[in-house]
Image (tube, rainbow, N blue to C red; front, top):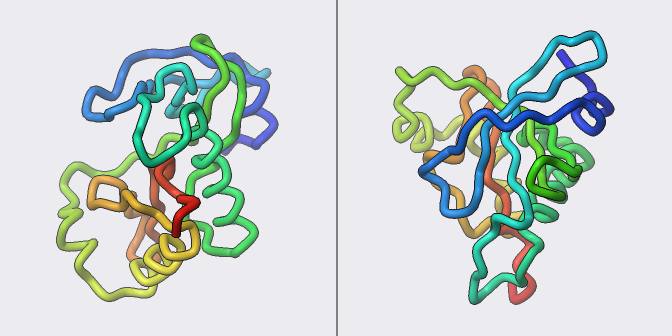
Length: 157
């Protein structure tokens, strides 16, 4: 496991692009001081597309805010996320969560479990306008994390 501090200060290396994303979403790793590494998602502000209903250049900040609300509100449903500088400028950097490709995300998302209800309530609190099956990360039967929280905290609702 790694710490928030390591996520903030470790060397960020981009290894590829997640091509299904509408904004620049990069896969990489962070090297720690002991030369170990962990996988991350890096979303530089410079790679955000303009949207008619969200202010320019602040989707990464919303990603970090969603993580902080998840922690403070004890939802614990967003991977560790920080704002930091990287190879393409300031952006959100989030812990990568491996999910089995064999999981049926649609079936999991349609269940009425405490984990699904937790993330649904969290989405209401942060006014998430973009939850979809591809944005849920089942960790276990009792825990589901969510990712891609740039389209949250809309000012009109």
